[in-house]
Image 1: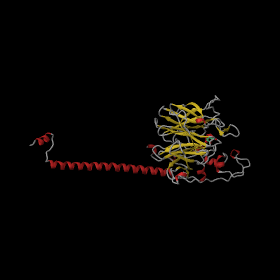
Image 2 (image 1 turned 135 degrees about the horizontal axis):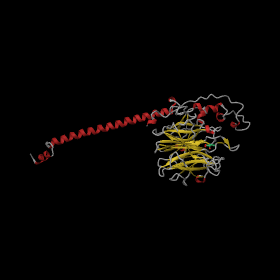
Image 3 (image 1 turned 180 degrees about the vertical axis):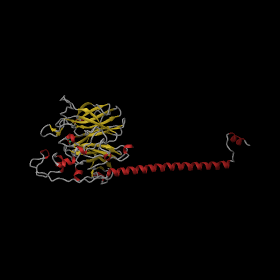
Image 4 (image 1 turned 60 degrees about the horizontal axis):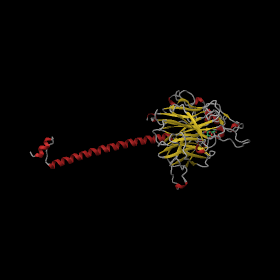
Length: 467
Ligand code: GAL
């Protein structure tokens, strides 16, 4: 036995002639290669299977959300005697429009769109048949059995508590006019907060920013206006920051107000009011981008245009940077959201509490330029589509776990009894060709369509709550 063989034996290796050894090595390498390739193929197939099934689930979810209902109204013939509240001009001859009838609390059309309390969505006592169903326009009860008071609101998803918080105007007071030509109003009660795990069952967390009863010089004195409150969380400071429209009863202050809290359920401390960028600010919203930067968007210059500008890092103020957009378009009630790197916005026209046609807009940079895509409303009927389903935008909520699916949140205002204004929540999706292509795009659409689908009743897909 040579030195080499002995050495191999010493290490427990069997000794073969060199030629045999290299053949064996080759065979083993081939076998290893086959195993590696198979394992790899197995992984790829599994991923494919998974992505196919995720894709299919998503498609069926989209189909479910997109099914559109036709709405057939049976309208009573216009009456000769009408409530003065609904009459626009003295001696008006024109037959009342559906919107006129809708605003006239003595009309049967009005009743049709403000169904009675016995039709309310009641998550606690409603029974299994209506479980998780949204019924746009019906009274919506909280877990205590009281109608939800969160108008002109928005929803914050709080990662810390894995809970949704819905903030909005508490309008639970008497509707009156501050003077004969003024808008219908209610005194400031404050900002309500409701919490939920499923976006359907809402627990009242109380009034988290209260109106002021006595001090008439206070911005939040009940005789003033507090509208469209929105809350975002600042990851750097750990504070919940609320922005809102602050005004006097005549809407001449045209300012924003800022409040802050350590907890999503308040209490919020009111900090101050200002005119952002020294400009009028009425309907407004705030938007927090993926990179943590936040923006204020507001109607300005007598509501003729919208402005957008970044907030400071602590979200407590605006910076000097501001862009004007949709100039001379007279848009308000902005609701901004983002999908696959593109920014979208839904706005309304400026007709007070009366509903009008919504428009969707898009931009590749949040600061603009913003393009108009057209009316996002689909289904229902012509009247519904041209009146945002008789409601006005307030917020667009991305549905977690369903990329490209959003909940469009709107208010169906009841100017004769504002506390009884209703919520219209509907599925909003992004995809397909928009109605209006930008002029410079040579008719090739640069954006996808934003679609809000009418449903008398609908719900998020089964299984969404478990995901
Ligand atoms: C609307 C506005 C509401 C409220 C109302 C008062 O145009 O969107 O938030 O201000 O006017 O009439």
